[in-house]
Length: 255
Image (tube, rainbow, N blue to C red; front, side, top):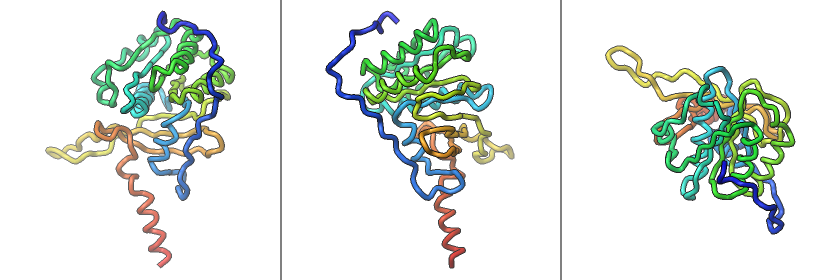
């Protein structure tokens, strides 16, 4: 916290502009969109991530770090992760090898434990405004006393001014109106079978359900995604060719 001290207000900044977010591609059926839509919508801006059920918090955090790793790929900047003090008792510490598996270089992550919610929100604002980080992640405690529409609006303006993505983890029971670009729900799914060995099914890659709850005028939708070390989070294999198969079925019916 000592390295992030209040700075005098600058008057030479250019006017703030809101970050344009990609629109989903047309033609998506039954609420399922192309995997690139999810990556595009989450690639910029300010997003809230909430767990779908108890125990999914770690999965949401892993997704946030994976997205942050993509944001800083090639620009040489570091990541900042700020959590509430005492969170280690609930979720444990970050594991370096686990971060590396998500595409994050552990040595490029600055971790801060804020003693209170006020300090946490201030740290996020100053980290974004500093321009020294390629992505910023925050994790709020279960009880939110200060995070509201006004606080989220300040964070959104910082994100818009600097072009730095912000991923804020909130408790699964949190709600209310905020100024964040998007709110997402992350839940674990059973892994699909990855072949057999000695008559037993092999465990497949980790899978998750990513649900969009609110973003501008977009309707709620969901993606089933899975993870591997080479591609990160991507559309689940059983759904990757769904648009192509659906188009083929329409052509067959028309014939």
